[in-house]
Image 1 (cartoon, rainbow, N blue to C red):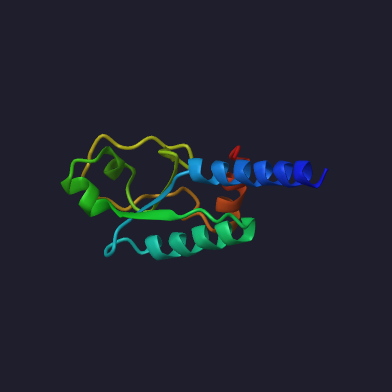
Image 2: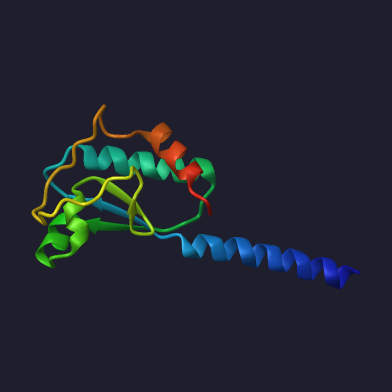
Length: 122
């Protein structure tokens, strides 16, 4: 009986861990030039902390992506991608020139990011 219970708990933990590993979070920003980048970075990390999600975030520089002709540069800075998709449902621009991203109503804060992350099926 104890063995079965340990096996079930072990499988449940493995399942949860596997879900976290499947989710890829990328933060696209600019080291200089976009004043909203640091604010959104802090808000994203606060949201992940509040959700107790232990998922690493890949921080990528939009300028470097542009130099490599990487299509993610078209999202602008700052942007949060979850499994390659914009957290706020926007498609990348066709221009790969580095640019600051405009958010209607201002850069999303912790509350808005939390709401969007909670809606994601893990």
